[in-house]
Image (cartoon, rainbow, N blue to C red; front, side):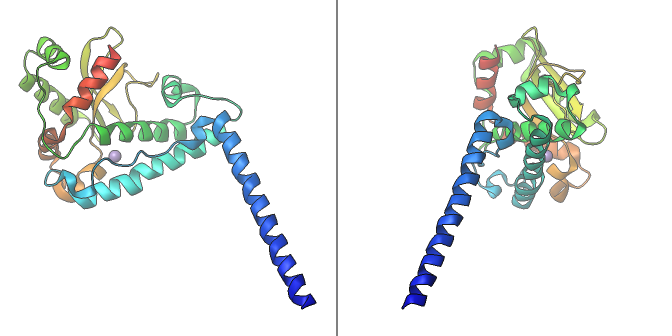
Length: 241
Ligand code: MN
């Protein structure tokens, strides 16, 4: 009886101690999260299933892309932020704007996180078209026609040697521009030759298309236009103006 009581106390105390440790760990995490927001970057849950973009992007590519590639950028960004932002706060946009003062790890993974978060939202399962509105007007007046805009963005994607991104972005004079960046760079970065607010991003790393398209980047780019969420892109355009 006494032994059982002792054991019960021991278990009870151990549990309490365990809870205390957990509670302390939890509090500490919360404090760090509040003070140093970048330590807590997270992937936004996908708004559609992995197979929702078929036949243009296959389910396995989406699953590996989201759960492996993009997840790794997010994790490594948090690691870089923990090491480099001690005691400081910064939003991801601020980090991008000032990326030359951080490590290559921050540049690659901060860009990777930002670019992929945008990429998932730039796509939707059902084909949409750009309806009459502010973005359509701006595309018509900047590129003469939607077809010409499409061919310019495709060209930017096709002429980027190796891995990178093709962009529709708003430059600092509020004009629409098309361009591309290498690796995980983007137009927000102070190191980028093209600068502005990304509106629409196209991932042209081989991991984005190789399982289905192998070396046929042109076919991937052409099919990808069927997935663009124009409502989302227009919202970004209006916001950036
Ligand atoms: Mn990617």
